[in-house]
Amino acid sequence: MHLYEAHVPVADTEAARRFYAEVVGLQFAHRDLRRDIVFLWAGADRRSMLGLWGPGTVYGSEFHECHIAFNVPLAELLAAGERLGAAGIKTQNFSGAETTEPSVIGWMPSAQLYFRDGDGHSLELIALLDESPGSSGAVLGEGLGTSKAPLVFQGRAARLLPNAIAVVLASREMSRLISG
Image 1 (cartoon, helix red, strand yellow):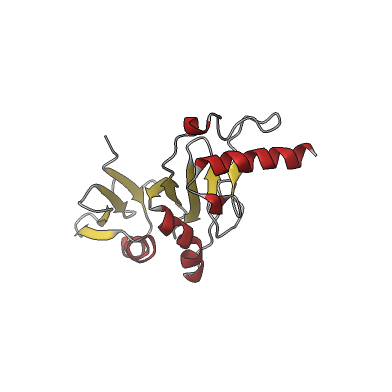
Image 2 (cartoon, one colour):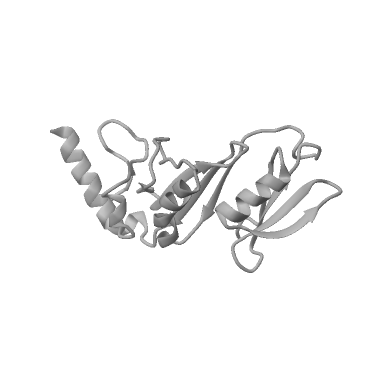
C-alpha cells in the first residue's frame, strides 16, 4: 500500500504550481481551469499525485495549513539545504531550528529537512535509511535523560548516514556529553 494522492488549499494555483514544479521537483500532470485545480505527479510512473486547490474550490475555500513529506534519495536530501537556500527558501530541522543540514530521527531511522511553501504549508524532504532500529540492538531515539522524545541529530552526526549504528554511537556520545 502507498499513499496515492493528497490535496492542499492554495491562494494562487499558478504560483503554487511553479513552486512545486520548480522548487520541489514535481511534474505537471493536469490543470482543471473550470475548477481552478492543478495536479502534479510526485515521483515516477504516476505513483503519487498532489492536488493544488484554488480558493474558489471545495478543498480550497476553507484554508488550513497542511504537512506533506516527500521521500527522496539520501544524496538528494543532503544537497537540498543548499539548493533550497540558493532559491531563497529557509530550511529547518525537526525541532524547528533554521539549518541547511538534515536532522536524523533514530527510531525510524530517517533523515529529513523541512521548509514551507508560499501558502505556509509545511513540506518535508525525507530519506528513510536502510537499517532498521532493531539492527543495532538498541531502541534509537529514546532514553536520553528523562525525555522520551525522539532524539534528533544534525551536523556531524547527520553526515554519518546511512549507517544506523553511527546514529547509536552519536546517541551514546550525546549522552556522555550531557551527563558530564
